[in-house]
Length: 374
Ligand SMILES: Cc1cc2nc3c(=O)[nH]c(=O)nc-3n(C[C@H](O)[C@H](O)[C@H](O)COP(=O)(O)OP(=O)(O)OC[C@H]3O[C@@H](n4cnc5c(N)ncnc54)[C@H](O)[C@@H]3O)c2cc1C
Image (cartoon, rainbow, N blue to C red):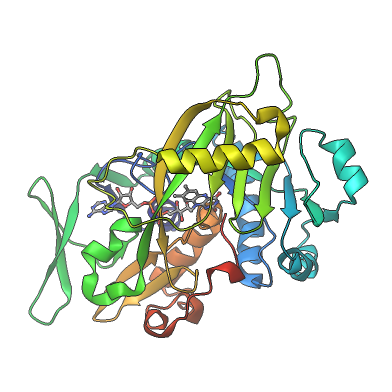
């Protein structure tokens, strides 16, 4: 979020300094890791669909301009074991925005994807424009492009310093230097609650999320990118994943919110229980992978708001301070469009939206499943 906003502000000729404690897309960040899913089915949330369409346009156009392939179109296989209202309600919305989704009869799905056991799947859809983004790599590319456009980047940890009226006067960097600006944006992901405990209070929760990569049998390529799409298994628990990208293994994750995590100090070792559960699901849904060994794993974290929507708002006590975050497991794909919106709020060209306000944190009732993750 910070990188894309800095890039957009710089495009408008602003003098921007981007500061990150560990560097773009590092392994503790929520944007770390190899890949993220991009999809347009978002229930009835029109704004997200609009932003997915804008983001796709920018992921594509800028990737081409920068000679970097950041978005890879694979399509997305939606498998509904539970009710499929989420897809049904979404179809008119995403078609209105020019994205295509095909309901797949079982016989067609079995013919197209013999790698999958569809026995207990009630309904199947194929979303054509969906795919994956090169996550960590994209963060680095955006930071490089920002610098090439004249932006300034510093690797340093930042603490805000407040004046007597409670406004942020300047930033203190970990090397002891100071930074002053007309406006500040804190897009600090899972570190936001530590930086602004009085504003975010208990409205934001962090959850540990494990991602596994399993190794297909030797000589098979039917789980590689190009041969298999991104996929979502809509059930309780909700599983999602990607084909093997660059030989790293077949990706699978359970979207259930696990226990809390300290993003700075906690070790990133996957749990034996999580691996066993993933193996059991894998063997059931993708029988060829029944005995596939775990070949890589990552532990990341979601920064969850109670209603699953993001935060993009002014600090309540400091007019020149903005807070953006609470990706709630689904914001990576939106990056280029979201950064554009945040930049427009900061320059006064757009107003912050109520659905992303800080004030709603106090009253919001948990309803993550209404618009899903990834
Ligand atoms: C396992 C997993 C799978 C996901 N899958 C998807 C998906 O498929 N599709 C999708 O769209 N989204 C997905 N998401 C969600 C998405 O990745 C996140 O919502 C998004 O990356 C959050 O970005 P961010 O910029 O808010 O936070 P981050 O990427 O965490 O960035 C925050 C940055 O702030 C820096 N920072 C923090 N404090 C300070 C400080 N004091 N001084 C200086 N720098 C500081 C950190 O170093 C960090 O680089 C997933 C998330 C996870 C964890």
